Length: 293
Figure: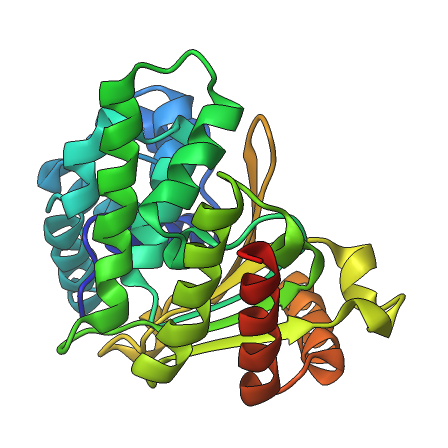
């Protein structure tokens, strides 16, 4: 299982939080046990980037009354979490709120998304992506723009990875297909890529909600990404699914079971009004043809 550093860090955090809560120990006691601030304990328990030391994890396990077996599991997760994911080399090109997402996406086995305005980054061609970046950051230097393009390409490599491919299900409203981002020729090339990738890769599905559908639940819910993760060798440590909602100034991560289920239900509703893959491909190619005259 390719986890990079984000997933084991979140697994570790959830386990530490559960142990502390079950032991009835406050954060104040926990911070005193390893001589850190309360903020550090919070960051550890929520899976945020933070320095993880084996001696601290072992000490917390002692304070929380963890069994030797549980302690070994947490120390193993600590070792995994200290590994660097490939995306850390692009730290200067990743917005702070997006770093966690890139790590989660890299660890996920399934990506399900709904989009109303733009195409998903995993399916964007460089020319399309470049225009989107320039629209958001008009003063960004060319070198940094290209770093972000390179980052996108690295993320997209999972689509065709022979040993660890990610299953991708994308549902798009029709409107973004008509918006000529980068001009008609760039958009036509983007649409051809969108139409072809679903045929070329069995793990990628692209479906369109036609404009004629009118009002549907997706319009009320808005765009989102649902990430599902592979089973951990220790079943109870399997990472729960996460809903990611990107905003202009930050991002929202939802992982409570009832919240995730609501989005899963909404996704099923959107899928019901979407065309199948073959009809979606035909529509995409028709729009591409209109763009090029």
